[in-house]
Image (cartoon, rainbow, N blue to C red):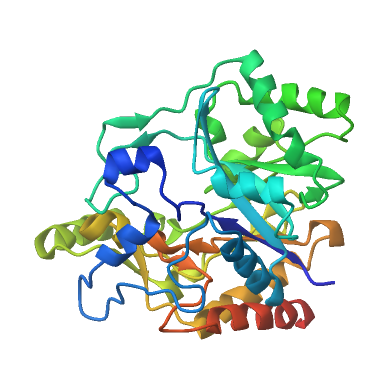
Length: 365
């Protein structure tokens, strides 16, 4: 049995009215990518797309080409980021709406509600975030929770929607910033059963399983997925952190962490638990969005990524078949440097090593 790996999918590759107003006409994630610069010797920027080019997600041909490429290399489906700020306001929803309405591509999908406010420098290549709110995440109470459910019901009943335990899967990005999340989950579970579903399989993001998982499960979540990008930094001693911050301030370089060192902590013992899903991370470089103030992993290669893949697969295969699931961060987060789409430096090699890792990891002891 090959595990199911679901890749996060960023829909920020088409112009929107508000992005045009906030950042300039025609702004997309490609805008940041093209402005990215090498900030120190050995830094690889900008990253340039290869096979799919500088695509526009308004085009069905683009969306199909992405799905075909992902499916060919063993990715089970896409998890689209879902930006709903209140009952009247959404962003970046055109690509998923088109996928749902058109029935194409015929590729499994699910949703992750990114329930956080956007600030002035949320997407822009300007450094640290501004405190000016552009789009505020607001929770309007039970009646709006019902509206939200019915807005997404057509997706939940779509045959392509990814299910666990025969329930549509719905991720919430920042549940501990959502005071009413237990009421929200209870409301949706009730509505799901009244509308022909067996319920909703809620998954929460967490960066600290040992401290947060039990609390999240108590609020109604079925499982969590782990993201340990900051684990290497968290394990450093206080004097090391002070020294590194001082050096960065003097020579003005990003917060650099070796990919090889960081990858040692991407998967933990907790990820063997039935209700914890690990995350696969090919790379990370936030400097296209945040410049010298960004965080980045350094010196990722397809071969190092392959070792990480095997580690994830060995962890996943210890679980029952129905829970042999992992998330991939990400399919196309070009502005954060964690993408699987081909670029001109590596071509399809990350995808090829991903595919190799799926089978090698699951068959190894």
